Image (cartoon, rainbow, N blue to C red; front, side, top):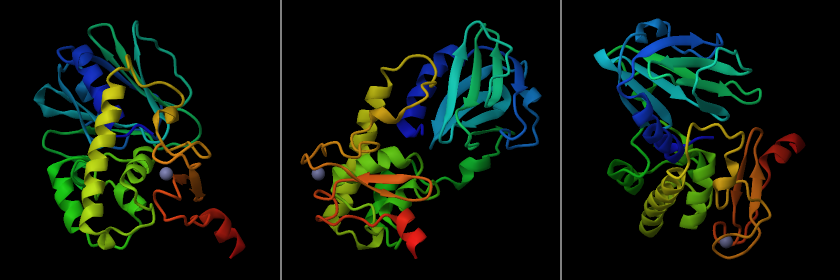
Length: 279
Ligand SMILES: [Zn+2]
């Protein structure tokens, strides 16, 4: 669930804690979470953290010599700062990174979905970052929207990290509501005004979320982050623009929340999960 603003604010909070400290230990807590074989995580040990940043929804921790540790929290990944560090093996744990300043970073995953992951990249390697599209909200993204000609559903297109990096289900629901666009609209058929609204809505939604996230302290460990959206996860509650109850269309593993008045011209989108069962 953490998307661009949540990971950006997390990186900003972690930087002053981590940068300048030496990595003292890296403990893998599960077999499945580590997505790279070489370099081995132990190669991070005794190196000083040089930078903490973000690309798309990836947290990027760079140590001296250019080795990078990437973390993707997926749907239910959480990151805790432990001070003093513990040595427990918590349920859903991915790894623990112990630092010379007496703090450890614990990454774990709630629930049963195993989507969170971590990577150790050699200098100059980009790993999964190489496949990412431009950052959501960037000028490159604005230009992409202006010339987009695809036939995918807009909601799917915006969440495709190869197209644009940083948006997930939550902020995409809010962006489309703000822009007054149907989740099922196709990028190629948007008119100039709609494209403008899409670009500005992405910028506004991300900026507001980032401002909100910057008030958070510590790691990113709340079990639920779903209450910070205007439209996402708010089925039945009033649309922030017009007051109409928010509608929802379900897919097998997720749902899209939208306003039928502001976004789909009164049309209720067919429930995909149900219609597949009935077919
Ligand atoms: Zn509305």
